[in-house]
Every structure is written in structure tokens, then in C-alpha cells.
Image 1 (spheres, one colour):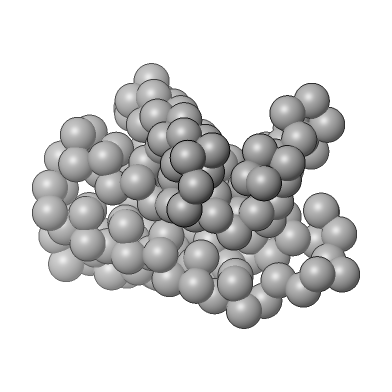
Image 2 (image 1 turned 180 degrees about the vertical axis):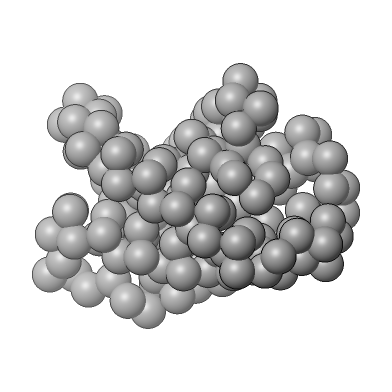
Length: 162
């Protein structure tokens, strides 16, 4: 990975951690709206953004989560699995919005990892946890999609990775 990509991913990780910290009161638990998840859309612009987001997830869960190692395994694992699935789903012909809808669908679907964690650690009902975690993820990703499109016009996310 070249220096430009490393610096860009460091910034992404720092943004993820800062956003999770500021909104930590609503970023964890069965009902969660983790605003920093909007950065998941970056992988639709360039696959290398996954490193910054993954680092951000790991650091955020390490610093802010009350579930400790469980959140490092399940939260990080959920993000990693989602990115691996997306690498197979993205096509060069996909539009910007189609990629964002794929990101949303995959991240919402993989929230079952978080539901399993909440069931095992907090003894919360699995289906309730899945429904609420998936709902929060869907809201964040759908609401942030137009914002990310707007920011891309200014920042040009794809060019930042070349």
C-alpha cells in the first residue's frame, strides 16, 4: 500500500473513531444508530477504504464498547465479512447509488453477527436484537447515501486512492 493510501485510511479510521466517540451513546447495544457506519459507503468508491474503516471499527470497539473483547470479535468480524461479500458483489458497471444499495443490503444482513453477540453476552432476544440492529444500520446507511454522494463531488473519494 502506498503512502497516500495509508494516510487516507488513517484519516478514515480517525473519522470513524471520532464519530463513534461523539455519538457513543447511540452507537452500541441492541438499538443502535452508529453514525460512523456511513463510512462503509467509501468501499464503493475504492476497495482500499476497507482498511481505514476496519481499523476504525476495531479501535472504536476497543475504546468505547462496554462488551470488551466480544465487540472486537463480533463487530470487527461483521464488518470484515460484509466487505469480503461486497468485493464479490460489486461490478465495474455498478452506478454509485447501486453500490451504496449493495453496501446497505450487505451490512444490514450481516447484523446477525451483532445479534448473536447480544444474545450470547447480554442474553437479549436474538430476533429483537437483529431487527433493531439491522433497522439502525439501514437508517444510517440509507440516510447517509445522498450525503456521501454530495461529499464525493467535493472530495472525489476515488481519486484519493490513486
